Image (cartoon, rainbow, N blue to C red; front, top):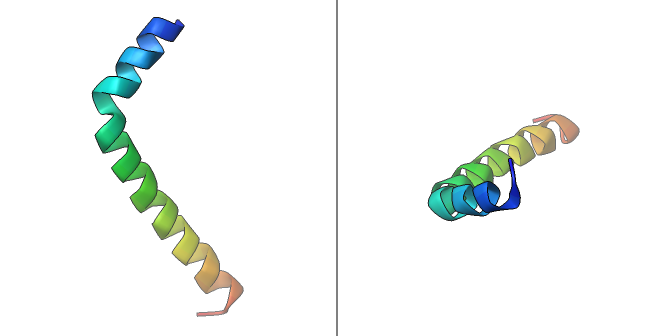
Length: 39
């Protein structure tokens, strides 16, 4: 994709993308933390 398409997509889905990325990062972080601490 060119930069115009990328900026359009990021503007269109910024809110949802940020929320989903955060929730995914939190879940992944908790899983990794649990594995490291043997929970």
